[in-house]
Image (tube, rainbow, N blue to C red; front, side):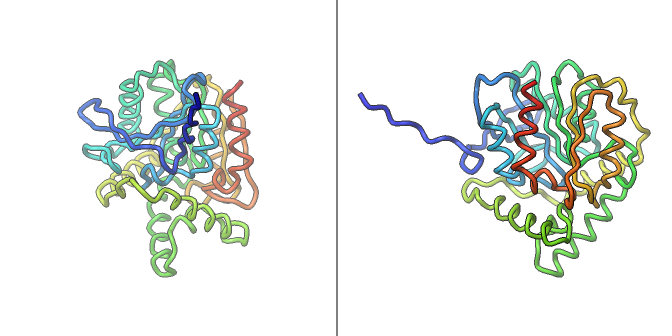
Length: 285
């Protein structure tokens, strides 16, 4: 008897599912190796939906891990009113994780997702084993309250130059940064069918409000977070100034730091070929 080998599911074609919890229908995608230890939950960035995750990063993690990514409440295909604080987003994430039947997870949070991860680990430390937080900073961090202003400026720059604002927000204006941005944006288009719903203006405004609140918030005592944490960013992040990355690594007592050269907010996407193996090695320990 000949058995046909099933094609490997990738981020380009993995189906979007929903799960109801806390009065919200959360949209999510799941792929990777089922019996590969603790699952990795991806926490998404400002203005993003599921289709904003870099396929090279998701598929890279899924090569050896079970990966789960979801839309925040009121974002993309998830129902409900969008949250306007990191604390609310963290509680929603906890609700989703528990609804998925997960007793413990690793967290990968990018940008705003890294802020949500910090709240989750303080609210329910037993739920988290390890964290990877990139392009992010601590509550009250330098320049975080100005993220909304930077975002609006680069949205206008994108409109005036007929480019995606992420080319300015995530990448440097050097030849290497411009090239990396174009390649990243092309990868985001690889999924051509069953794409997620775009973020609404109301959801974006709620997230920008949450970022302003986070930037004005009194810094938390992160010395109590004993979990292993991998902190990464580029050396020229203009959204969440890179100084915050180093500050965050110093505040977390069990952290490792990666700073990529000639790169900005989206450094882990620009350097995905280096970042993914290092992240997987960190999670495997």
